[in-house]
Amino acid sequence: MLDRFSERMDQLEDVIKEIAIEITTGTFVEKLPPEKVWEKTGDRVNLMVELIKELREYLYVLIPEKVPTTQRYVNGIFERLDVFKERLGVEQDSNIGSSSASMEELRNALVNITEFISYCRNIQKEPSEIIYTILELRENQATESPQLSPERLKHLGTLMKEAQEQQREYSQASGKMENQLKELKEEYDRIIFSVKKKEL
Image (cartoon, rainbow, N blue to C red; front, side, top):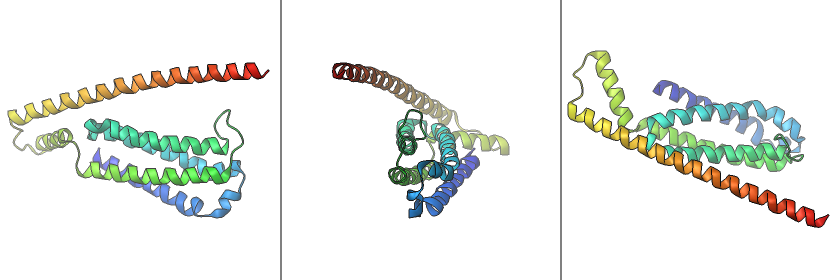
């Protein structure tokens, strides 16, 4: 698991370097029409999204007590990339975009992704105590080494329950926030409709 986690980080890092070297450092890109910019960046942007999603799942396992922190990193990146696509006119119902403005959002997204990779590497070096103990237990079973003491196993169970409770709390908070945003969007749509109706 840790090997695959490391491979995905390396792969994401390689994609970032490719984009930074071939695209974001070249001012000529900003002079291209938006559809041409997407042709140059689209496949790699989509690949970054998939790699980040996979890394997010590994982080949920490796350090479940930091699910909110992990989600903040990922949400921040995806928001940047969404704005990048919107400004290119890639997203449905978006206006014809601006290459220059979109490239600035992509640069900002690359900075956020670089920070996310550093976060991943720190977790890799110091995973949750729960995960470290499980990996230790698995290694002991493979090598027929002495098993963990009952006290250590009990402590592991306590940590697991605490992590699950934290994840439940985050899920509930996330669901509540989603409902609030939906209500705000509906209210916004009603106001816009009312204003436009008065202008007619």
